[in-house]
Image (cartoon, rainbow over all chains, first blue to last red; front, side):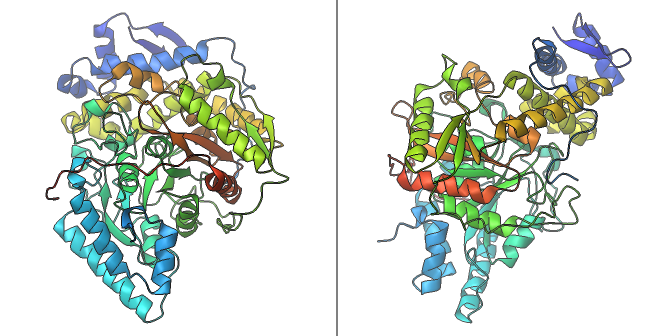
Length: 76
Length: 476
């Protein structure tokens, strides 16, 4: 089951079925991808949300994130 | 008798200067070896055409004549090489092994190619890559997949698979690869090679087909540490056409090779693989034995820990997905059939992120960079694993999937620290090499080469090199 993000509230909500995946893909202009390879959108979404799940998993023992990165050598 | 397919770049270069070898003779010997070893059986080259061979021979002839006139362009003068097929060489298609780009003939050379041309190096051909450098299972590729010369039953690792196979097989003494999530270090590890992902910004990406603007790196793959330093010396430096290119001074990368390690402090990040009951014992033993070699060589060894590695890898993968989708979204929308199943699936992962997710990932990234800077504080280099999985067999999907969780490469794509792999032995089970990863401070590649070379010179193992399954036959 894939999960999808509401960009307004940043609340994660599970996509309940293939139909919802297709609706989101339609918004993104990606239905031709699904036509070419049925099921591939759901498969890719599932991977993305597996990683987002990891990030949501406590404890997150990393430093508090910064809005502005510290100076990193070589980056401009 | 000289065995050209195992001759190091440095030794070939020395022989050319001593008059015992010419660029033409060297190229001819390599081509003979490629033909005898049936290069098409390992699928390293994707464009070793008669025209390409003629072009290479013409370059070698020019290099030979220049040397006779006393015009010496340096260590790479007359040295053949291959390019991962994401890097532009004028007049040759840059396809990324993706049908969508099959007619994408480069109209100009990449920055690194311009540097190599100036240095007199001889371009032999484009090398295979996982489609668009996306990684993924070999079975999902729409193209012939490179075979590991050490044992074709096992994967080569990607995505710079052709680059690693060509160097391991002795077809060329060096190749350039790219590394967005470990794509130089992974195949170099599995093919018994020295592979470097330089500091972000050290090598210009001008002329590189991007996958992730913020994590792509170009770097050398070689059979020895010194060779690697010589290639980096050629391709490093500022390039105004790449806005992320650094103006940091370019060191003499081979200057510290051979210097003792006394006074140096080496951090060891071993907790992830020592605490993983599924870690490959041969990989683990190889790293810990290498640490002892470095201790014996005079380095002080200290433990280091890095928290939240699964989170770090998740951030790296998600940002890679976002960048990759941004690069390829138009193509995916208009011509999805021209993307292979594996690449399509991976690039689409970025489609599902919101803007809020992306901002959150960038904020997390800054914290991760700080974590890694703390990890590096007080040490000269860090030694850890590249991967600590046992190499998956071709077709073993579950082992392949698991290998992504048993790696420590992606944190340094995210942070931009330089990271390299060095072989540490050969598995009695798989016949494949094992490796360790050495991580340096920003722009401190010379120190990494010093440590890597110290290990290389005292490594308590030796291997004759891979043995290709030789079938007499023609090459394309």
